[in-house]
Image (tube, rainbow, N blue to C red; front, side):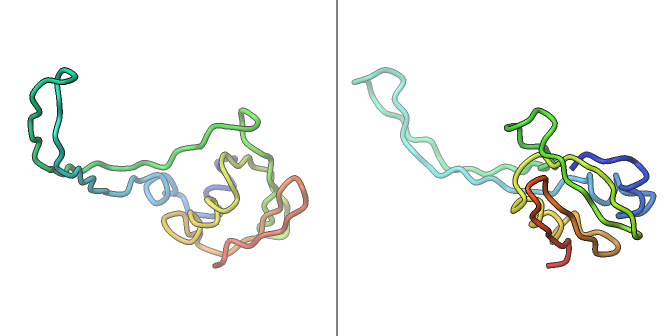
Length: 118
């Protein structure tokens, strides 16, 4: 979601970047497999391994370059924002890392009305 700083502070507090913009730790596991350098050549076994990374929130590209426009109702007023990605992914974000301080409702450009509450 792309919105004004004022709206983001209203939804998440003044330290919204540390709360919502922080990445989540993730472990990737790669299973063991065999590898051939040349077709028909000898194969070599590669042992399985795992590594850690931090997955940061990102916007999914597609559709309009800036995402679809949405309207957010907060404090009795409607604010505009742009949503990069699907509504389903945004709802999952709002239920997890992006949980706002207070619930709000938002409307897509096609008129679908949704709540940030689960």
